Amino acid sequence: MISGNGMAPELVGIDLTERCFLRCQHCCVESSPRRRDALSTVDVAAVLEDCSRLGVAVLAFNGGEPTLRPDLADLVAEARRLGLRPLLYTNGVLLYGPPW
Ligand code: SF4
Image (cartoon, rainbow, N blue to C red):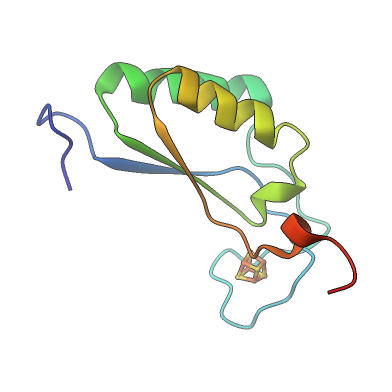
């Protein structure tokens, strides 16, 4: 889908990490606890900046499991500051904490 300005996709997804602590059979990114973050904080911030400049409306933070990134709150705040609508694709486990 194209955004309101007709130039950029309405939604862009960023794979923040390839790490995850679950082992779902349907996982399409072959995540594991030993994988690494795909992009540094600076790299993600640069992508956010580009998306904002192009007129992207929604920025989806994907993984792996994005809540494993210690900088996730900062990246969400930066997306909002740039006028992007952040969307989080998470398995939700770390949002509630133990016991699961
Ligand atoms: S929770 Fe998501 S990222 Fe983690 S193993 Fe399952 S499908 Fe893959």
